[in-house]
Image 1 (cartoon, rainbow, N blue to C red):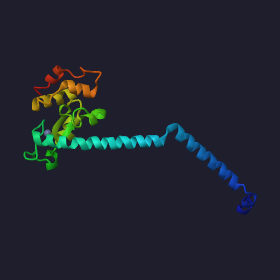
Image 2: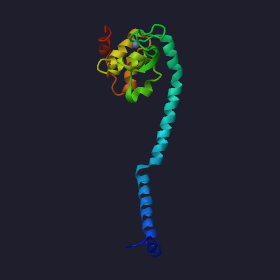
Image 3: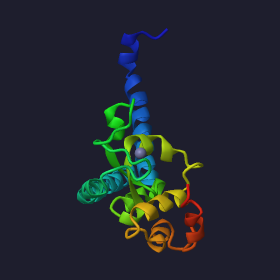
Image 4: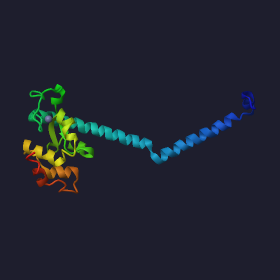
Length: 177
Ligand SMILES: [Zn+2]
């Protein structure tokens, strides 16, 4: 059996370790070359900075919208007329993006693509996409802020290649909801 001393004497540890180290460095280098994590990281940082800037620029618009509308466009609750039996935070107003998912960032400051909602409606009602398709949310917007309603602009924001993605008839179907 080889003892530590005998291994040390023959110097067998060092070449093995060196070989492993060389392989590790080589593997890391080749994975860097194929996946380019440094470039990827920089891109992510750029996106994150860009996002922050978009959110920052939209903040004033969103604050003004909640002030101007002053109540939930679905249920009419507001901090002044809060939901009964619910925590007051559920009656605070916020801006909800009708165009969500990957389109959410584009919708942040577009009056035709957002609703002013209470936290209850924002966190519960509209989360149910089956009950609240975009066409129904647009009908709320049409009733509440007809001057901001712009179906052409909304469809264009979501998909410029599908100008009839949502039709005015689909929106009008929900007007009596
Ligand atoms: Zn509400």
